[in-house]
Structures are given as C-alpha cells and as structure tokens.
Length: 578
Image (cartoon, rainbow, N blue to C red; front, side):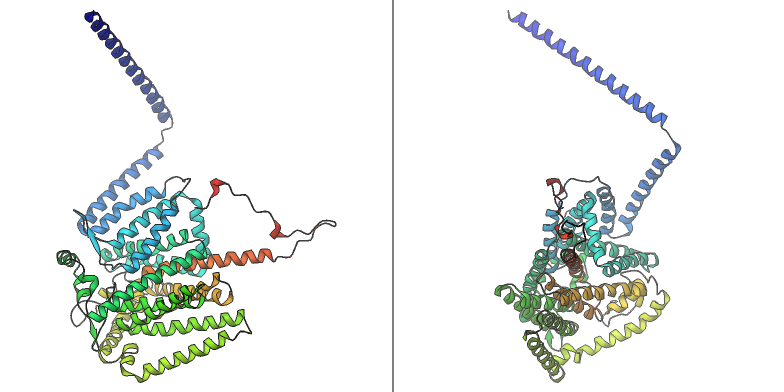
C-alpha cells in the first residue's frame, strides 16, 4: 500500500516539474517575441541623431566622473561630496509632478534650521567613520535642501508661488538674482578657484535655500510673527551664554566640548584655536557667546533690537510686550558684553529710526492721539541723553566711537582701503572671485594671518562694483519696502514691517565696518520673511481695491454688477494648497 502511494506521489511530482518546465519555456518564448518586436520597432526608428545624443550623454557622464575623481584629489572633501550630490539633485529636479509634496515637513525643517543657525555654534561638528568633520548646521541644512528640492521639482504650484512672491518685491528680487549672478561670474576671474567654488556652493545652500524655504512654508502673518518670536527666543539663550562668558571670562561654548574631541576638531580646523583664545580690549573681556568673534555677536544684538521693539509696541498681550522689552534689554546687554562698537552704532541708528516710523504710523492712523508725539518726544530725549553720555563718558565713548586699543583697528581699516583700491580698479566688473579678498589685498596682521575688515572692500574686491551695488541694493530696497508698508498701514498685519526695516538698517550700518558673514543666514531668512510680508500686503491691497470698486453699469431693470459679489470658485480636495 505504501509503495503505491510513493509511486503516485513521485508521478505527481514529475508531472508538476514537467508542467513547470513547459511554463518556463512558454514565458521565455513570449519574452523573446516581445523583445524581437521591440527590437524591430527600434530598428525601424533608428536615427544617427539619437545615437549621437546617447553617445554624447555617455561621454558627458564619463567626463563628470573624471572631474569628481580629480576633485577628490585636488579640492577639499566637502567639495567632492557636493559634486557627487549634484546629479542626485538634478534627478530630483527632473522628476515628474507629484500629487503631494512634503511642504509640512519642509516647514518643520525650516524652523529647526532657524533655531540651529542662531543657537548652535558653527564649529559644533560631528564625524562619521571615513568622513571629515561636518558641522551640525550643515546637517540641518542638508535635510532642508532635500525637502526643498522635492517640493520645488514635484509641484508647479510651489514654483509659481515662489515666483509670484519674489515678483511682488521686484527691486529686491532683481538685486538678489543680480548679486547671485555676479558671484557666479566672479568664478571665471577668480584669483583662487579652489576657494571660490566651495564658497559659492556654501552661499547657495546656506543663504538662498533657507530664504526660498521660508517663502514656501510661511503663508500668513501669524507664520511670520512666529518666526520673529522664535528668533527672539533664541536671542535670549544667546544673551544668557554671552553674559556667562563675560562674568567668568571663559568661552563655555568651547569648554563644554570634551578635550579629546576638541583637539581633533582643532587639528582639522586650525581657525578654531583662535576662537578659543580670550579677547580683551581696553581692559574688558569681550564675550563671543555662540559666535566665532565678538563682532558678529554685536551685529546679531543690533539686529535683535528692532524685533524686540516690535513686540514691545505691537504685542497683542501683556506677555508679548514684556517679551519684547526683555529682547531689547538682552540686545543692549549683548552689545555691552561683546564690546562691539560697530554694533552699538548700528543699534543707535536702527532703534531711533524704528521709533520715528512708529510715530509717523501712529500719527497717520490717529491724528488726534497724543501717544505718537509723547513717545516721539521721550525717544528724542532718550537718544539725546545717550549720545551726550557717549561723548562725555570716556569708557562709553571708547566702546561706541573708538579710542584706546581701538585706534589700531581704525588704522588697519584705512591701510586696507589704500591697499585694496589698485586691485578694485584692476577688475571693477567681476572682481577677483568670492572668498579671495584677504589674499588679493594681502594685508597681514601683526600676529600673522591675512585679513580684511570691511564688507565695502570685500564686495568691491570679490564681485566688483556691480556686485557691491546689488548687495547693498538688497538691504536698501528691503528696508524701504517694509518701512513704507509699515507707515502706510494701521492694522496688525502691517506692523511686522517696522521690525524688518529696523533689522535691515542695523545690518547695513554694521556692514560698513564688518566683513564677517556669520549672520548672513539670518539675514536671508529675514529677507524671505520680508518677501512674504510684501506679498501679503499686495494681496490685501488688491482685495481692498476689489471690494471698494464701483459697480459696473448694467441694463435697465437689472441690479448693477459688483465684482466683489462674484461667487468664489469651489475648491475640491485634490486642489489643496501645497
């Protein structure tokens, strides 16, 4: 009985194997027929033009691979990594349209980048096995870049929104694009291309991408207020660390790093050793907080003053107004502990300008109110008293206007200007390449090392006269457009313009004597906020014009047609905003 069952099971297994073998042969035959048909169809459509195109693309890929291999040997490791990531970004860019894009994740990543760019030092870095040190800021920006690339490439509505938002600030848009173009053209006349190309890629990823991400994700006035509030909260932490450094005369941001990791970081980045050195001027310790130099700390403090003043004057609740006063107090404290006289001058210019704008705005909205004249008179007396104190009290005069140990700094700036003019006139159109101002001018510090201390000279030397005019045109037109909307408006939505205008003025004033670019990312984030702010103001103006439009004449016996009464188009679920 068992022998019969074994025979039947063996027979069934052989039948199944034979059927499976026949099925495989049938599948192979069908595949061969399909392949033969496609081959004949391709053969009928063969063209030498298509063949040359494929061959050219293949040679281009091989040449690019050769360039990546050369970059690994010649350039820094991050540059080779950037060249490797470029094809990936291109593939993302040419991807087909997506039904949904991750704008929600992009918004969260943008807010994280804002927090990290302000609160985390630039020299905080991590190292993975077989890779160089990568700063935490770069890691945060990398996630933002990926989400930004997917959102922009996968949605035509996102691209259109970016264009319409930038177009609303036409002069700022022209200057932003123009300066980026001049920075790119300076690569072809660069004195050191190995320095200019990494600088250009770093500017693109750390300045322009966060600005565009802000334009995509920030859609309402509440969003813009939240960004400014987040920046103000970060300034409280920066001030607390700066005060702790000043009191203890120590750099806690560096000392909390374990010594073994710190030594490895200094070997990879020798400039970090200079950051760890204490800086004392006129007998006073100058705190760095989370920045590399106290000058950048003072610049940040000057930019925070108008933002705090905005919340103090336009806060909706007592808590917001108290928060604004605290930010202003922290700004003044940071200016003192950093010892940045340029930051103090920028603060003394930007804050009275903001108060003056507020007085004009209040008087225009409420002509019979005495709040504007009273606050204006108090602000005038406070400014006059402070200026009198600056000119009469020697320690404060040295801190703000210079004197004592600061005379050498002023002399160095004049010497640098004299050395830079021949190089500026040698190539006044495209300059000598971004990142090369110190090398081209050749000014050497008494302790060794090349430096240049003024952004005026930096932009003139690196990007020529057009790049210099376009860069400062960004600041001038951004401050003008936001200040104009602030003065002409009398509602909550237009009040943000005063904070933005004041911050841009403070930054522009300090740019005259400062070359460090630690706050450039913050500047471009605020530029993104300003673009959205101007776009929202233009939309509100168009809506008011539409609602107050006169009715069109109609036929007798019919009601006149009013454009405001036109029914709004229905929005389906598939048409949700990105």
